[in-house]
Length: 136
Image (cartoon, rainbow, N blue to C red):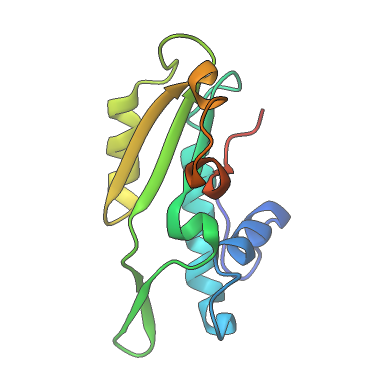
């Protein structure tokens, strides 16, 4: 999926708004948040429909950290917290390849895996934070 900042898809625009919802003055983050959302959705496309790729941490809470540099440009400094939930005993997608792809687009990537059976037993804030990125 390719999305330009001037014409994001509905899904991309919705995710961009969600991941910045708790930040003040999000109007100046529209372009960078749209690019980030597009990258997240593209990453989610690498996961088969039987499994899930779930976003957690500060991005799922809507409060990622950014720094400003040259002419009001923004750079994401938050890490990317991902949880891969597999419907079977092992992930269907190659996890090392998924991590490598994510690391090309994000500064720091934390990727955990759980089976669906184990995921259903998670009762900590981990379960609350996570947002599902993969379509299923």
